[in-house]
Image (cartoon, rainbow, N blue to C red; front, side, top):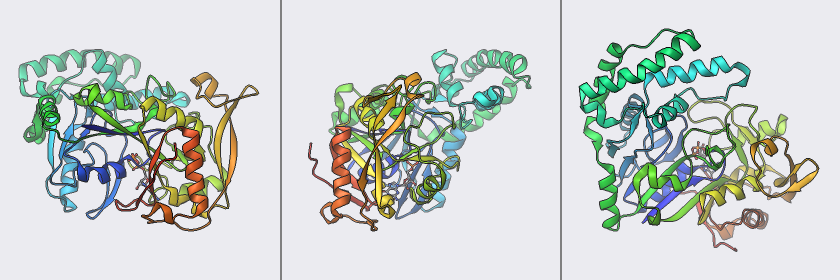
Length: 430
Ligand code: GDP
């Protein structure tokens, strides 16, 4: 059976922790979309890790980790990350990289950087990891697959065709030096050697694994709001962040996904540019305090180190986020972070042009939305590390019940700290 672990919001919900936790009872963990532009923070017996490309199953020797065909593969970053986890004492993980995965090329990173500079004040706040140019090229059919690395004449031919287009942009739009096929070829061939041992047919591997009754986890990157179709377009990423895309990006049958675990935090956080709509944002000293107390080391990007924007829990966005993911259950993380508050606002509606709505709107309306808050009492104590849901203070449980009612999906897990074992299990009330 397949379980998907995906984000209900803007990303950074704590999917890495939940995947690391659930990987123990799983056989395969697959990354199916995105690239090294976001990170999952994992804290376990080996230490603290920020994984960008490696699936979060790498800490278990019994788990096979798969980089699916839907991923934007930056080979250098993958190989560096593998070396890094091994340096931190993790046994060499089992890893298969799909021979159909496409390569994130140095010219994608250049294009992303040049384009953000060209846009100036209208920039998207890209991490400049090349993700948007990568996916553009994939759909324009000028991308290069891992399998192409093993056929040099074909590789040179495809590279020449791609570079021809890039250089028109680089020279005439961005006024930057052209890139050269003769320089790229040896770089790619060297990178090929770094992943050679891992390349395989993951489509057949997953087909066999499911046939043998194995449990497969799909690990999403970012969250519903960042999906280019159903998110806050165009302030989205360029690959689909929805569990449904796992069927394509990992190559598993749609009917095999039996469980969609949507991860959401007990408050909100959002990376990206300041111009992005983030309705329940808290700014000023109140926001600074939440940011400082959030996550495991404050709310700062795992990849970029950028301070994340923070806000109160947004029930309108999360309800929609769970709906478009098809959530069968919800894992609520970071409940412990809110223990310092006397009262906790929850965004339960959006006011748009004088009317209150509970439905998540399209971007032009979202940009005009103002939050409508319902304030709940806090619990004023530290619940960090609690492993028994019933032992939580009554107000903390009432807060979780309130969120569950408003998001309309069953909350089954409530996380009380960043560590693997800091988790409580809850019987849903809906
Ligand atoms: P992901 O991309 O969804 O895996 O999320 P990130 O790793 O980018 O961000 C989540 C942050 O919250 C990380 O710093 C985690 O260590 C941390 N975290 C996860 N669950 C909890 C929790 O229950 N409590 C606290 N305090 N931190 C948590």
